[in-house]
Image: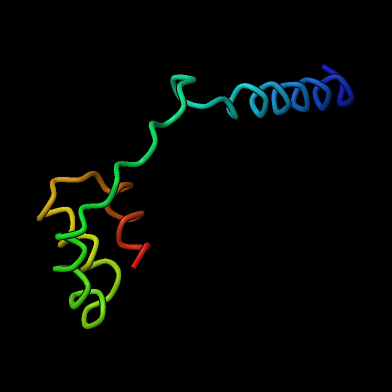
Length: 78
């Protein structure tokens, strides 16, 4: 196989991989985030101030059972 043909095949494989690799998994959009639990946010506010964002997200998840995405969005509102 000569060099230009090999380079052309490699380039085609990269383009095809890029196009098909950029599809969203499952093709379904994410649901909107749940509304934050105000009581849990009030309890998490001191944790955010003293221990930081990660500890606050963890505490919010423990109190509400929320998923990581919803907990992160809720704590970011503080």
